[in-house]
Image (cartoon, rainbow, N blue to C red; front, top):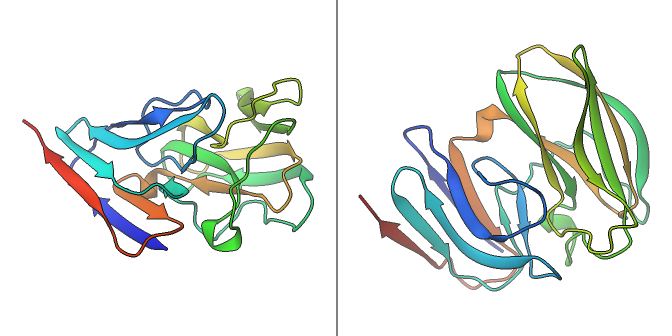
Length: 199
């Protein structure tokens, strides 16, 4: 495996990476599992609102901002999970919820047709859907990431979840991780990327 991180000195947005079904446009701070799949095309070139670009020159399964090992819902081998768990925000900002396997724990990522992944967050203002993919949608995405927006520090939510992906967990990345951009690949002999400077 190879891994490289960059730290932005100013707030930024990060666009590109290909075509995905998760509804996200700005991938700054978002966990993104990058693997070619039906209706999802990986183009590992990202453009920053600060005026530079990054080309991650690797054809293996890669992660943008790979999830940390501290899971909100810990994975269980060979089975999916359902239930509810409490989540409390540590800081103001957006929080990304990612359903999948850590790269260290799997030789293949979490994806395929016929899966179901549903996550909702119930707070004082009501219930918000973070991720909603059903078995009727035949092309379940390889990048199963959703966002809970405009969260206030200390806010508590009841996270209801249901997913049938064996060995997957739920990982949350908050505002504290957004300054760092990390790319990781499953197979490589060396780190290979291009930095494109712009105005």
